[in-house]
Image (cartoon, rainbow, N blue to C red):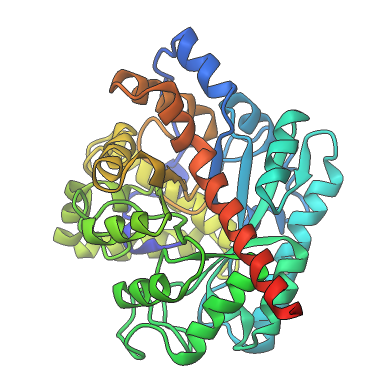
Length: 409
């Protein structure tokens, strides 16, 4: 996600402690058994930025950030899509090079942890990893600018294990409009539609998080496979352009797709968004404070620092307290609008400001408990936790096989 728009801080960095981790609510034996016997999939984690740090050991439990192997095991997260991301302002061969570096970092992390992790591309790979009690490591490219307007780069990404690509990030590409930029293409250009079809052919899921509404509808019309919104929430509950309207959720579901709910406070809580808009002067303070602590190119430091500051300001009441249960509110709303077969989890961990009580991956069983408390069946909870995403993955693989077979004929 990576966005300081919602960050606020008017305190000295020296006074900022590590995030205070909320006490886990009581998890029933039923919820615990259900959670740890389900395949739990998270479609969007920015932990890749940490993997680029040669001093960061993913196998060790950390007191900052949201994700590492010990905490994933404690929270029952079985499959993680590592985000391959660079700013949309970096384009051309440099964008490709940096994307490949991050892919290599993910693959190297798996290589270093063979007892705990397995590289995965397909739904079957994820199921095999689960059966072997290993974490399935997958990848999603966050921003179409990283193909450098070259369809063959999609072939390369697919061969290296990339499972989805977000068509845009914060700014437009040369062929697609972003939700947070001025429209330039009226959605997808003709080349953009070729990108979607090439992704279908390569078995790369189309991800419309970050895209403009028109880009979403164009991609939905062109794609031969269901599409995903890897880290978006519901606009009806929080009026953010990065969230999906009810009409969009219905359209996504009608073609078999899945919206994976984002945990970022700025996409969950309208009260929080209103408060940050009402005090724009505070928005500048966060950038200043982060800049004082972190080097300009130290994305990992920037993300963790902002998350810590915002968490403290929510706890002390400077900002509205966004509780983790609002994640479940968005899940519930998306289910009511699009159906239980079309909702999943896309946390945006290690890239966003987390709500109180969902500070890291160890808190995931709370979602299972909350869904049980709201009357969801075990079977439907399994769908939300991961089975819906695995179904879309399998569908993308089927479409790819059919398209490749057609090419041979």
